[in-house]
Amino acid sequence: MRIGRSITPGIHARVVVLTADDAFEESVRAIFGASAQIGLDVIKGKLSQRDQVDVEGVAVVVADVDAGDQAELHALERIIARIGNWPPVVAVTQSFDTGMARRLMQMRVADFLVKPVSPVELVQTCARVAKAPAGSEATEAQIFTFLPAVGGAGVTTLAVQTAMLLLNSGARQKAATCLVDLDFQHGACADYLDIEPRLNLGEIEPRPERLDRQLLEVMLSHHASGLAVVATPNRPAEMRSFDPDVVTRLLDLVSTYFDFVVFDMPRTWFSWTDSVLLGSNKLFIVSEATVPGLRHAKQLVEAIRERLGEGPKPQVIINRFEQKLFSPGLRRADIEQAIGDTFAACVPNNYSLVREAIDRGVPLDEVKPGNKITTQLKRLVLPSGAAKPGKEIAGTGKKLRLSPARS
Image (cartoon, rainbow, N blue to C red; front, side):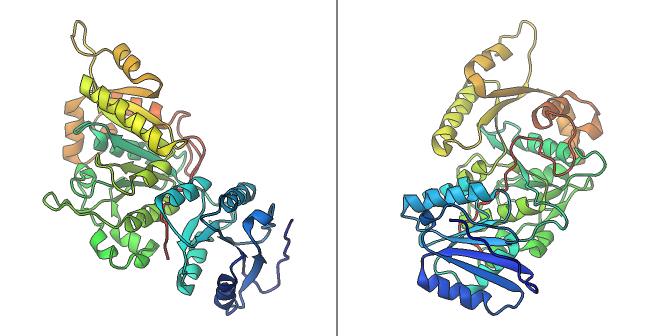
């Protein structure tokens, strides 16, 4: 069945709601019926009873789905696949668990709400996901994630330099790029760039609905290069476990407003780690050229494959690699054999160069243009050479959608 609706004069936005829930239908009619500028179409019945939905002129599709009905979930997946990148789809369900969150993220829903849904929550969510760049199609952030296999592998250095490369990858102007330090206890991104960390998760946690673009701007730090950084002040003696909804809401917001996002991950696995990895375009595991380092990298690859299934394919980077003649250490051939098809590259060691760049708070290229570390990273993150801001450079574009319920 194909549902068609025309654009009504005076209507600035049209919302389509798919639901079989009479109470939810009554609620959305009361919510959107009060505005003369919003047109509402309610399509009654289960999702599994329809083949497609006509979305011409529609700003948002709200799909009320029964989380316990596999036929409903398969139907939602088909509808999203046929709709494509626009309009955004907001899923509403009566229950939530990590399996459901993962399923909806794989479908690429724009947002996910859990009943009972307050009127303000629904309106704000629809308004946020419906914002597209004026005169153009919605663009999607490219996500680069660096995850350590062992401690002290140099993940922060690689993440910072990758962010700098992406920032300067535009042909005529700098690409909107954000570096996010997710090590809330021992993060060093702000220190490496000699800037003041401004993110205060403790302030957001009591009222996560306050987190919007304006508050995000207040909590962003900015490097002289133009790189935006999300980082918290170090709390080495304080081990806190933040509400995962707060963290994933923050990351979702960041991915909405930047062309490129680089995540510097902690080694500890948190409740939100799966979501971040699933949203990544490029996932790099960073280790060192030692036998334990290779073992840990291989174990981490296997764990990610088991947890994420058909998610992003992890690639292993061996950092600070040195190959000397007549050296008893591991050779590149040994590393490739041990790691297998997930081996990405060996990044050469240049401790003095990295130390000077960190002490000055500048990218490696500013200390030594054309250095071997930057050259190797360019091959990894810019395989086709420089790219224009917003242009896909790392495979299929993804919008990082993480939060299970937001307002």
